[in-house]
Length: 264
Image (cartoon, rainbow, N blue to C red):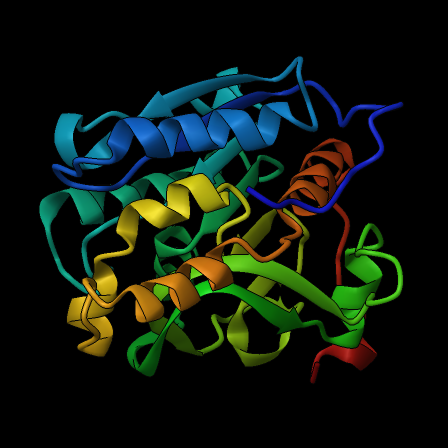
């Protein structure tokens, strides 16, 4: 795996982190869980992760017991009305109402689901994304991600694995990147990513067979597979992003946007 090198002389804060794994009957659930552990522990060895499984066990964390709640990915269309998806919606709404300063982070399906909860729209992509992709930051995003890699502060590089995207920004959120890839709410308590800071190359490669159903490519064609693997092995900024997420968790919630910037 190739990750942006992060200075380790000062670790990110040690936090209590709840992760909602929203996949249903995924054969890769253990590997996904370990990917969270690897990538977060790389920047915060003292953090404690606890995993919950809304789709399979109807499990949700007690917000009082955690510093950060991550709404992770899923193998189910977020536009579906399954009972457990409705439960996730109600959980997010209850956290924002009853624990207004609690920090929430949405990743991939979590990004799309939180967007829908607050009035955004999700659509099928014209062309799915797979592998490490550069995400161009807005001016506000460049300010927020002050840990962006030296020499290219205008972009972040993330593993992507999705065929749906947010087409309409949710109400009360601002874009930290172009193309609705990353949002923060105006209060500064909810942060979401279309891409995967928790996914390293090892985990990304588990889904190599998606090139057949997404792109109609032959997974037995070694030249094709080699090119996809090359994209998955490109350097990414997952560690930098996790460091920024964990620093953001311990910051006091403040309005992340001034009235003059509401058109951003």
